[in-house]
Image (cartoon, rainbow, N blue to C red; front, side, top):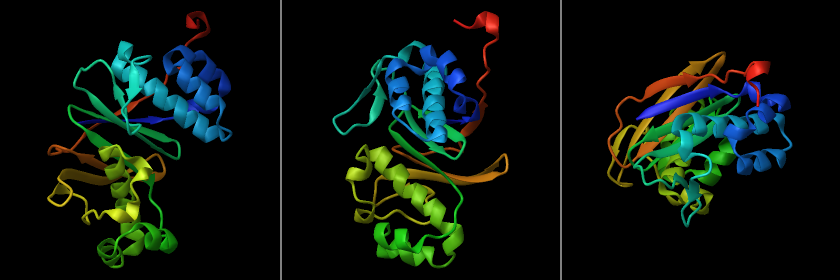
Length: 217
């Protein structure tokens, strides 16, 4: 499994988004235009650019969705991906099987969220170290619903993930990998969920290079 990360800050500039429009894709550009928050626009643009960079001619336009809304490549290449973003960082996990990825900036425990979204077993595990464990548990929940393709149609309180989310999960029939890294001055927790065993992901940081004036088209 490979995990790609990118600083989306260059795309906070509207001119940079326009320059990269061909790579980002028309559909995603329309989505960006419907977002009001500058950082969300940048995250969306960076995700589109990453997909083009990673999959070339496969995207755009050959990106489609299954009946549950989960995006996948329509070229039957056996390549799967999952996107996530938090703060100024955008992530894309790529592998040869179904997977789900979630990334979040490290945050303190949010008791109201935990009470609403976590099962009794999860809350018991959380209470041993609430501020340390909240974000890894939250990302595991999000990664699982992305893996299954149900998204938030599947209530987060309707299933339980193990704490910590590592290795094989017999109850949910999946594999986990979770880690926390420092990117710039921020601490980010990422959790991956997959249908096959996850080795330590190979991290690659991508950088958007603003084209020189003479190379802009």
